[in-house]
Length: 307
Image 1 (cartoon, helix red, strand yellow):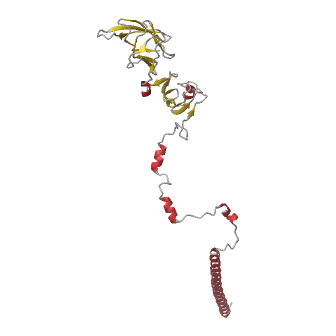
Image 2 (image 1 turned 180 degrees about the vertical axis):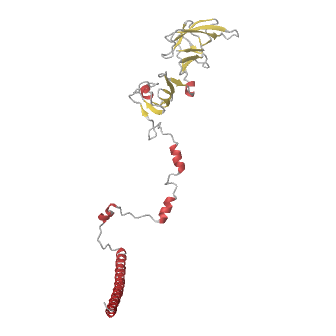
Image 3 (image 1 turned 60 degrees about the horizontal axis):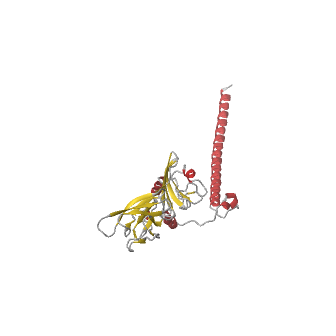
């Protein structure tokens, strides 16, 4: 190839290279412009979408027509809520709320009931055996009546308290006749014991009906008898003018000794010298002046014995 041909070829190559550069520049510019245009369109689209989303989310008119059942509102009561003032008033009301002290008190309270929920006795023992029912009843209150077996006072109703554990206890019962009873359970039941009270210390004096010519002494010392709750019979007073070795009077049933009883008493004729009289009480209740030292004008009848 000659120099002129080489130079011509070189110029042609330069023209082609310049053309390629211009085409590349134009293409690059076109791509930049296209990218910017695309970015603008995307930004505009996002702005429109955000605007529409904001408008939609702020729409409270239920545009999708959602029903109560679809969101569970049909299961909620339409109840008016309390105001802040009402809530504060309720929150500070100490009569409506349990305090820590209340909880401590309740947790430390006795958990075993000794009475019924109404406050009456816990165990009703009508038509039941009292000992059987109380054996494992531990500490408890009870009631018995005439149909209760092992009731200490027969037909008398009893209200009482048992303090103890299974097979071991102390029982106190109060009858509606005013009597008080106690029993012990330890290796089985013991016997009932009646407690003495002030009413037991007094009894009624009965004036005796005299026999065989015997008279009450001048109305100031009538012959009388009585019995206390332990079964001790008391006789007091003085008599006169009856037949010696005859019954002065007869004690009624319930006042008579289980075996014949004899005692010595005083008698007098009015002199200062003391004399004695021998008196017997039979199991049939007859009170007899068997003998006297100083006549029958004054004989004391003062004695105590057990039926």
